[in-house]
Each structure stands twice: as C-alpha cells, then as structure tokens.
Length: 331
Image 1: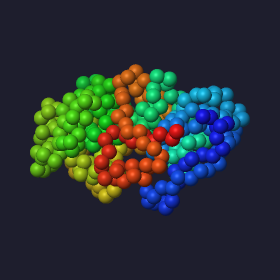
Image 2: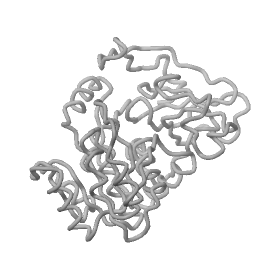
Image 3: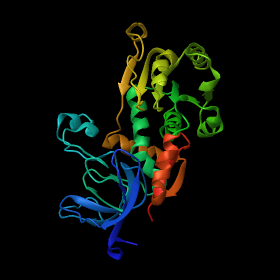
Image 4: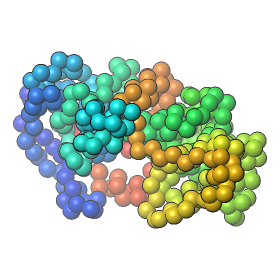
C-alpha cells in the first residue's frame, strides 16, 4: 500500500506528556515541502529511530527518489554548517531538530523528514533489523570508535543483554575486541551466543572490589574500554576499577539518580584514564555501522510488536523485562 492508497496516517500520540500513556489516532497524511521527503514507515522502533520507504518528495529533491529505503535518526535534521556539525557533532547542532521532540517522530505510518539528512539503508539489510541501528547501533559503534579501542583490546559491556548492550557486544567483536559482558545471570546464554568471550553475573559478587578483581583477572590486567549501556549510577562508579592504564569509560546509559563524582581524581590521574560521553553518532558513523551490519557481522535481536502495544512495551522496558530490541511493525 502506498500514500496514494491511504487517506489517513495512523499514529501513536502521547495522551499525557511526561507519562507513557498512548492514544492511537488517525491523522491527515502530511505532504513534503521543498527539500523534504515523505516515508511510509512499515517498521520502526522508538520515537527517534526508524526506517521506511520514500513515497513522495518535495520540490528540489533529487538525491532521494521514491521507492528508496531510508532511516530517520535521533537528530532528524541539522544545519551541517555550525562548528558542532563541521566536526561531526550533528546531534548537538545549534539548530538541530530532534525526532519525536522538536519535530514529529517515528511513531506513525507516514513521516516527513529532511532529504539531505535521511540515511540510505543498504538493500541487503532487513528493515526491521536496520531500525534499531539508527540510534542504538550507531551510538555503541561511535562510542567504541571514539574510545580509541584497537584490535585485541578487552571491552567490558555493562548492561550487555539489553537493547544497546546486545549490539555493543557484536560491534566490539566485529571491530576486533575481546568482550566481557556484564548483566543478570539469566542473560548469560544470550550474551555468549552474541559473541561475548566472558560473562559476569554482577549479582554473584558481594562488593565492588571482588567484581573488579574478577574482571581484572579475566582480562589479564584490565579492560581498555568500559562501555556503560546500563542506566546505572553504580556501574559508573565501578567502571574505572575494571580498566587498565589509559583505559576509557564510555558513557551511554543515563541513570535516573545523580551519579555525582564517578571516582577519585587521583585514580584518573594515576592511571591516566579517560571518560567520554556519547549522545549518538554522526552521518558518517551511521553509514559505517550500517555497512558492518550489511556484511552480516551484526544482527539485531528483536521482537516485532504492533503499534497498539506501545504502552505495554514501555512498561516492560521500565521493568527491565526486555531482551534485545522491540521493533514496532506499522503495517
């Protein structure tokens, strides 16, 4: 079915902003203005990452023909000319449009987006598997790339069985790293099947020191990178103790509680550690992460769910009851 066959756009609307209460509404199908494209979103995940097929283009659009498969990222559009954009920080563009926040997001069948900022999806990638890479996948890939990780380094992934973590295991392995996965014991089989070389059930350790000693032991002196995918303040306070000299803590998960000082400045100085924050990736980084997936080195583990189930999905996520990613099928 194309845009010519439909008269309305089924969308999930936040009934009470600030909560997860959802209403499914039938809205008019928007029409693309100059420089924009209209995509029919057959499958997507979240409000700020999704993929679909271009069904209409606005005036002046030449680079993205109808029928193209494209993705929408956390940043739906950026100026590409400010200082942040010029150094690859498009998600922090001074005039960025954030999907699902500053501009209508991807919880709808038809979505308007910038033609110059939409991401082409490789033909070999399944749309459902590509959707989570538009934010989750590119974020973990960018974190690993910016960490300075090299082939043969050890990477610790905290929250390894979740939506970000399960992709982080695979990208780290594809980039030549050895991986220690940290999560609840129930996720060990899942993480090892993804390629984790070692698995650590954090609940089996009585204190931070014993956990740190174990990780230092299995990595033969400490990891080079600690990728924090879990939204846990405790993970941030523990992570520097997992690292070797000049290791790097990569901050991705955002704790609801205040983390405060991660660790003593003395430890950071004495081991010459680094702490970097990664919001998401650039246009170049998303193309690189899609290419790795298109080569079959990364596979999104997902559940396909209907738009009407979105509120239930939110509750499952908050309860920590999801494995991998949930993808919305909007057909």
